[in-house]
Image (cartoon, rainbow, N blue to C red):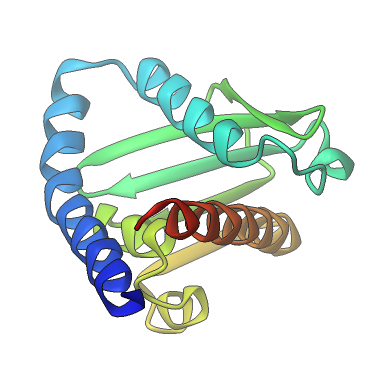
Amino acid sequence: MQTANNAAMMTLADRISQAAPRVLDIGARVLPPPAIAVGGALVANILLVSDRSLEPLSGTRICLEITNPRLALGFVIRAGRLWPAPPIPWTTCIRGEMQSFLALLLQTEDADALFFDRRLCVEGDTGVALQLRHALESAIYRHKKRLRALLP
């Protein structure tokens, strides 16, 4: 039964990783970047609902620069949550293709491997990027565990 649950999770991750770049490419052409940033902040904050690890980073500005499709999203951390903000000026900028960000989010590839393969680039305060990564990875892990418990 556990194998079936893992297969269902893999299939979902595969489907999302295949469809998301196309959806985001269309979204980037139709929606303004601030609207996309609102959606990204909403998803991140849902994942981080019971997490307080970003509170010490209050006031920190983060830019996610997606190179394909070309898109720059800005966020500021306030009260441990991400809020949409202009992409510049930033404290930390994380740059890469959409596929690399999705691999990071879906945990299909290791973040360190993405960095050392130069598929993701971090500029500015790398400590902020690491804290954000650890907070999101921990939150995703908790939610995956809850989802697996709900699946038959």
